[in-house]
Amino acid sequence: MPHELEELTNAIDALSAIDEEKVPVWESMGRVLSRDVVVPIDIPPHPKAAYDGYAVRSQDTSKSPTRLRLVGYVHIGEVPSIEVGPMETAYVTTGATYRVALMQSFLRSSLMSLVIMRLSLTSQLSPGRM
Image 1 (cartoon, rainbow, N blue to C red):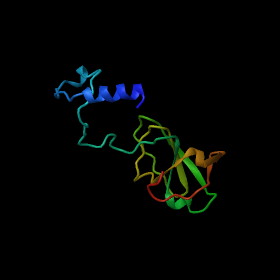
Image 2 (cartoon, rainbow, N blue to C red):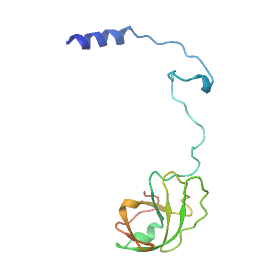
Image 3 (cartoon, one colour):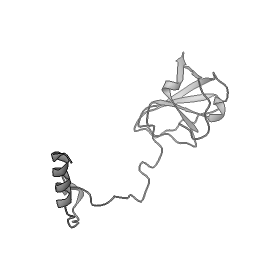
Image 4 (cartoon, helix red, strand yellow):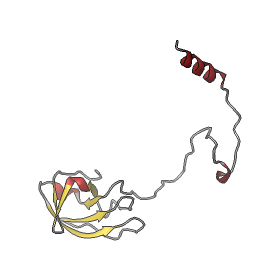
């Protein structure tokens, strides 16, 4: 066994568990959690876009290419009020909330081409797919 690996093994063997201590979050800087923190509610409460893209109805993506009318934008921090109707889409920025009931699927912007405020899809989506 190489010398460095032996030193590391000896150091790990010398470690021992320490007692848990409850401290307020604001005093926890530089400390290590002794177990997982589990939150009883969903955070965020609504789906958020992991990347820039377009909210679409999956049934409108069955043909490729498909042309959709751009009906609006959803920016981060806004409560979305846009409802994507038949053959429509809305642009959603990274981190923005989108509501699955109003915008059934979400398509990454790299999968689309924008031509004079109309979008051409290059692949079909299923409901809930991103």
